[in-house]
Amino acid sequence: MRILIIEDDAKTADFVGKGLRQAGFQTCHCADGPSGLEKACGEPFDAAVIDIMLPGMDGFAVIDGIRAAKLSLPIIVLSAKDSVESKIKGLEKGGDDYLAKPFSLSELIARIQALLRRASAIAEPGVLVVEDLRLELMTRKVSRAGEQIDLPPLEYQLLEYLMRNKGRVISKTTILEHVWEYNFDTQTNIVESRVCRLREKIDKDFERKLIRTVRGFGYVLG
Image (tube, rainbow, N blue to C red; front, side, top):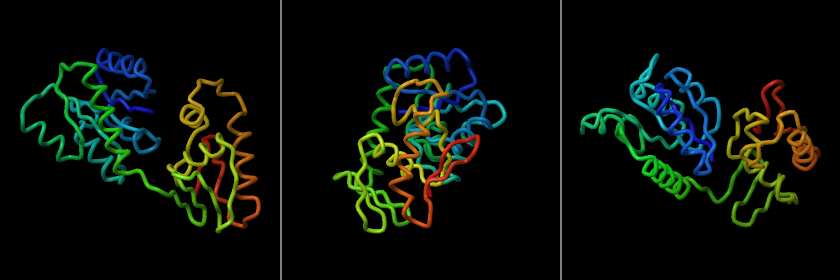
């Protein structure tokens, strides 16, 4: 699970980042509003922790931008303001939860986990579909144009991840983190090798190719 932290205070960001990593999450940190919004809209994350008082663009504007981009990213709002008005504004803007500073790290982690469970229960589809490519989550069956495709576990996980992020360019590093969940040397060709095998099964016999390489960036499906 990958969490985006948008927080300008270095001590708070370090405190939150270390705690989340110890809890098994992967983290990415941005120290200002504009870079945080760009990161949130440009890369896949499972949840975001966003401070209100940010340089360049406040947290409310960042949340506005995320929701304007039609992203259903679960968001926890952090703020030094504990007023009812501030909480209401954070939730009305599109935040899913609100935590006032100072806060307990264990409470933050518990709230993130609750948001992820809730998002999974609401958003989990039974079937992923991209054009004529179909992946059934319960049975793990994959087919294209009605023709069944047999995939080993890693290739299935890679395809599922790409389909969940259809239309978005996913970097090799991000794929390694989400599909393999190990910190491989980024120079390894393990991703290229698996994508090549997956293409052989998904695209080879079809005129319309669904998996594309974006040179210098990564891969995109759709």
